[in-house]
Image (cartoon, rainbow, N blue to C red; front, side):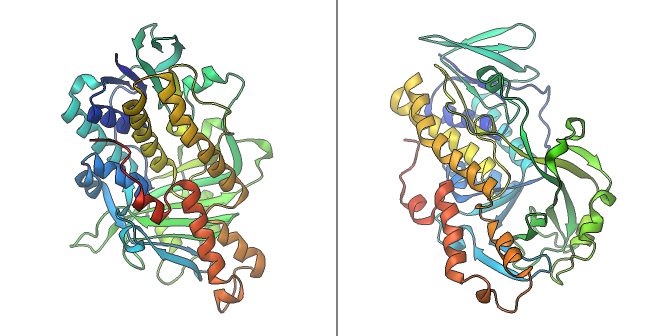
Amino acid sequence: MTVLIAGAGIAGLTLGLTLHQIGQPFRIYESVAALKPLGVGINLQPNAVRELFELGLEDVLDGCGIRTQEYGFFTKTGLEIWTEPRGLGAGYHWPQYSVHRGKLQMGLYAALLERAGPDAIVTGRRAVGFDSHDDHAVLHLDGGESIRGAAVIAADGINSALRAQMYPEEGAPIWNGAVLWRATTQAKPFRTGASMILAGHDHERIVAYPISPVDPDTGLAQINWIAEIRRDPAGGWRAADYNKAVDIDTFLPTFAHWDFGWLDCAALIRGAEKVLEYPMIDRDPLPRWTHGRVTLMGDAAHPAYPVGSNGASQAIVDARLIGAQFQAKGVSTDALLAFEEIVRPQMANVVAANRSGNGPDGVMQMVEDRCGGTFARIEDVIPRAELAAHAEKFKALAGFGIDALNARPSLIRT
C-alpha cells in the first residue's frame, strides 16, 4: 500500500525521494497549486548533507548554494569571540552548505519528478485530517476527498493540520519576543568568502552568510542576512503581520553603526530589494508524535528556533530515519514508533537548549554579560577551552558530532 505524505516542503520531498530509493510506493499531497522557490537562506549541516549525497543530490546542492567554510560569533562591534572551520575543513566526511531554501526545495522537487514521475505529487490539495486503523490509515483532504494508504506522514510544517487534530488545545506557536527581518543582498563576501557569522547578543544581532558563488564580473555574491531585535512578548505577536514585507526603517536605526570593517551591516541592510518580517517562534515538545499509522516529522513534529542551523537539517534526517525503519520493520506502527523513539527526545533537548540560551549562539550573551562586549583578549573573558566545549556540546546534542557522524553506518541499506 501507498505511504501518504502531507506537504511538499524539504521534509516531504526528501521523504518521497527516500521512499522511491527503497522501492516503497508513496504519494505527496501539497496545498499550493504550484511550487515556487520561496524563502531565503538556510544552512545544511553535514549530517543532512550526507543523506542528500546518498540520494545522489550533490549536484543539486552545489547548484543552489555554496560549501560553508567557517562559522563564527562576534560582538556587536565585530570583535571575534569564537570561530571554527566547518564541513570538510572541520574533519567531517561531508561539507556543510549555505543554500537558498526555495532553490533547494525546487531542486528536490525536480529530482523527485524525474525519478518517480509527475503522479508522485498532487498539488492544490491541502491535508485537513486523518484516521488510523489497524491495517491502514486515511488522509482527509480539503474538498471532502479521503485517501486510504499504508501510513500517513505529516510533513505540513509548524502550523500542521494533522498535529492540530492530535492536539486540538495546543493553539498558536509560541513567540519569545524576538522579531527577525530577513533578506538577501548582492555584496562582497567577507572573511573566507564562505563564512557564516553571528554578531551581537540576545537582544540585538546580525546573522550573515553567502548563498551563491561570487560573480566573476562584479565580484559580488548573494549574501543572506538576518537582523534580530528582542521585544516584550507580553502583547503577543500580531498574526496578520507574519512573514510580511516591511520598510527597513522599522529596524535599521539599531544597526546603523554596525560596521566591522570586514562587514558593513547597515550597508548590507540598505542593499536589500525586499525585506520580510518573521517572529521567532517554536512549539512546546509533545509527549508523542505517533498515533497508530500516523506520525509527524520535520517542523510539524519539532519546530525550534532557527539557531544552530538545525531545522531543515533535522527534517532531512527525519525522512531518512523513517525510510530506515520502514526497511527494518515494514510500513507499520512499530516503524513509526521506532523513528519517534530516536528523534523525539533529542529534539526536545534541542528546543530546550535554544530557549535557555544554551544553543551554539549562547556565547555571545555570555560575553555581553561578562564584559559588555568589550575586551582586548577573549581569553580574559572566556577560556578557549570553554568556548570549544560549548560548540561541541551542541553538535553532539543535535546529532552532528564529527566522530560519531563519520563512524555511523548509512541509515538506508542500498
